[in-house]
View 1 (cartoon, rainbow, N blue to C red):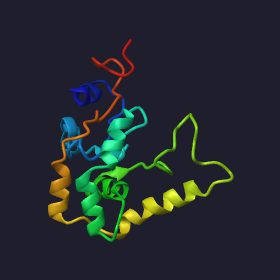
View 2 (view 1 turned 120 degrees about the horizontal axis):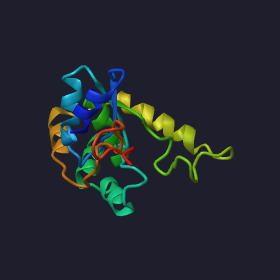
View 3 (view 1 turned 180 degrees about the horizontal axis):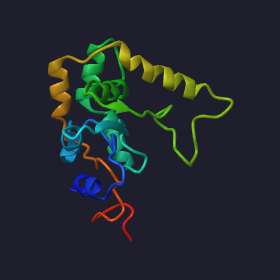
Length: 166
């Protein structure tokens, strides 16, 4: 497991594990959260809508999820995107969010000087703290099995299958 390797090769014990987490992966993909949190390493999640490297069909599948759409409708017409973020936050992870769902790091961005899309997107994400999913809804989202995703591309140099391996 890359987390065991990370701990055996780290010069400083990490306090945060940065991993991708979205509906469809389950609440503890690969057991990374449980492993880290049992050792005092908190989860900081990215990619609640998947990552830009994720195939477009998978991203569309996530946003078209009947489960996320139905739960969003039950909470005042919230979008699947809102439900996906709330699920990550309510699971106890800190979350990194992009200003808009079409924001790309190092590429074209919806965030330019003539657009209010970034500010609007960040305000929408902040509203994720103003409501809650029920325990039954959390379990229902936990059980979604598609689209799959990889919890992390990164691990410690020197570990087998590391992103940094040569």
